[in-house]
Length: 163
Length: 163
DNA sequence: GGGCACCCTGTAGTTACCTTAGAGTCAAGA
DNA sequence: TCTTGACTCTAAGGTAACTACAGGGTGCCC
Image 1 (tube, each protein chain N blue to C red):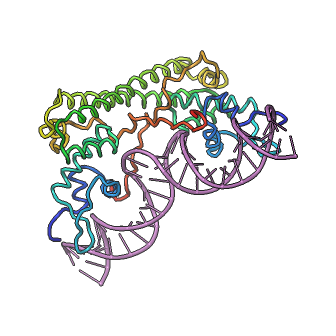
Image 2: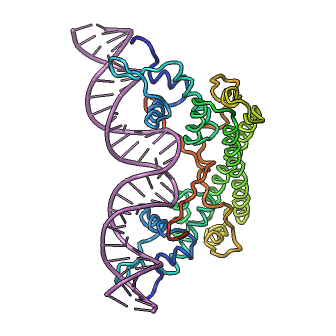
Image 3: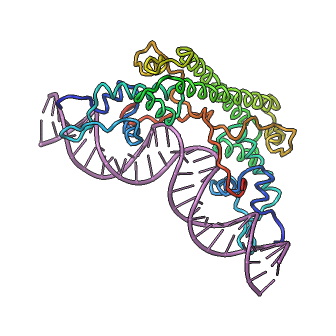
């Protein structure tokens, strides 16, 4: 193999999964790379840098669309970076709003939990009773619309990793 | 139409979308209802109560699997409600953990934002520079694995609603 | 009987990937 | 040389919890 990194090496450098790289390529976030004689993707330093940028933004919970926008700013610099600031401010707003929602949610859950401090006979479980109440004075929805994801998907490891 | 609520009426009672009800039926969360002569679904008070229960749990950000578990508890009551408490405690743990993650995230974003207080010439934008740094002393990932969703999907309204 | 709101089924799209199947490639060891 | 094992390829399907849409049928009022 002449030169260039294989996809697995790039994945290690940028700390992400191989499949994620191929996905970004399909999504147009990473340019189509050169290929080796055996049809392997070959990457250079520019790919490492670009992928690191993307992963860093993702670790800040930006969407791929937001990242696309930032990448465009990088490629065709305008007179000032006002739009970059604006994008970041908006994103900060999202995160802050979400924290507020989750805090209200946490309070509700704790209120609910307090209804049943110990393991009582199941039939009189106040929690189940309260949850089935349709009235407006019960537990209220804290969320504007529905907010997804206090549950993470923990990626199943490949068999090659653990075995 | 003899008696029973149509799906639209049920949706209004439980404050959810018609499609969501059909989805819950497919998922086995709601029992298959009776049908009218014209093949319309017909619901009774038990459906209203059960759907309200589900929606209330969803507004508390529980997964459908968790809700399924709670519904099972309701249907076949055991000696005590310890498992209900356990489920709720675990869910509270999820939410609390998520709040912590998002707070770290918010701090990082604000640190990043401070690098560029005004609209400077784009080429020297410190934010873009910092985001492309691969080094370990830059902005760090605050998230264990990836945490989805500070962005909400806001459902597009149907044309019949706004027009 | 015309029009409108409502309902039906079935399929596909959303986000950001992860998983799997089935096959090819590469380098090293026996 | 052959084989083993790690790596790579493409294509398709799965995840969560719905939402959207196409193409039709039903119920009811005027």
